[in-house]
Image (cartoon, rainbow, N blue to C red; front, side, top):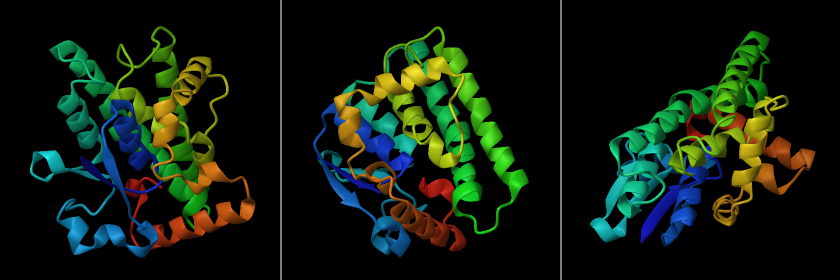
Length: 235
């Protein structure tokens, strides 16, 4: 049994989607980031960085793993699924996973901060992070032109990148003119396990188009930003 400590963010959904794809039993432990539950001594004992997601493998002596990419690698290697076992195949998956961890996530996260959450609209910063996110989308689109998925078969690399790219509207970044990226987004969205993972837990951004509810989400995220809890939380 896996305990998943998470919240309704792209980084959180990366791991819940993987758990659903792998059909691993897990217990959902949702943390209220606005209340700082990720900073409690109990959670810091699991994740010293005080960020979600993190997992605890109860079948392996309560082994804890933090950082979303590390969680994905651990789960793939534990099950022998969603990542090839040969060195070259494994490397291809890890390359695209690192692309998300070092590029897509940080750039879209900062776009969220300056476009959605930061009280002052600093247009050069918005342009910078939206522009870099769009550039990274073009990289994905170019690769997907000749590949169904990012690294051979469907893998944790696809899960990691998709969980972020699917939220492009929230970051103010469009996917127009990127047909191969759009095709990939829809193919993965149609997977039943992906849809289940997005509900563990569901995000207000997905459940409603109501402007008042969206504004409540923004205000909560803005509070975290002002408290110094940056986009690394995945909001």
